[in-house]
Length: 273
Image (cartoon, rainbow, N blue to C red; front, side, top):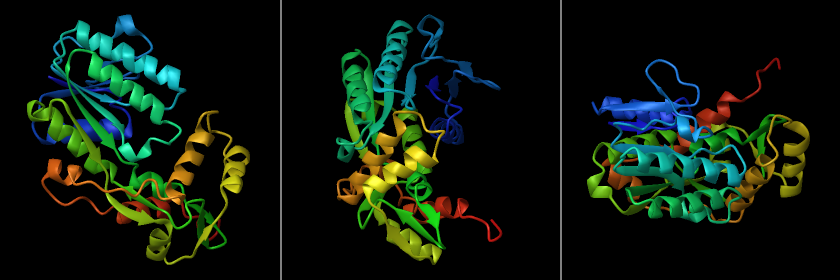
């Protein structure tokens, strides 16, 4: 039995769907389960039940401060050891992202994975093309960003989900391996060209100001996280490529530019708005 954590989230649900498409015996876990999902609350260690699970796909439990994220991951790994899981597949962060504001939680979790005593595979996921497109800001008939001319080796979320499913469905050949799963470098200008609009660069200070003043729903740790993504792209730290993802999938990758364009277009203001 394969269990995918965070199965109500975007990556977790896509990974579970990809496993089912491969006729794998798989289920999902979530703190708010529905249907046939298991209840799996990382903040309730005694209540976590991984009995019968042979392979655990640990989708990173982000959206919290580092200490909380690492504590949650430690708890589920402890439960995996306790309940006899044999292999853990962890969705980490691309190696090019060492400087990003959320890298530490991933690298600390990788250490926990290596030390837990289970067979393991680490999937160092690149940043989503959907995220890249969604972070572009519409203004005055064009898009603005703090990305400058920098490129991101963006990757479609569906490709990452399929890669996780491929590895989880047959984990033995991937045991002890760390893969860097990134896509083709794209820029904000590329996205703007496809949309038929101009791209304007704003400074990092202006970007941070907008995050703090115009997006009140952000949690305290999120503005510096997003600013780190912007400066990383702007200064060329996230454009590295790798053949790992295409090798795992055995096919060409989905076009990250088309995915980013679709994400940006989805936030385009209406003509009347």
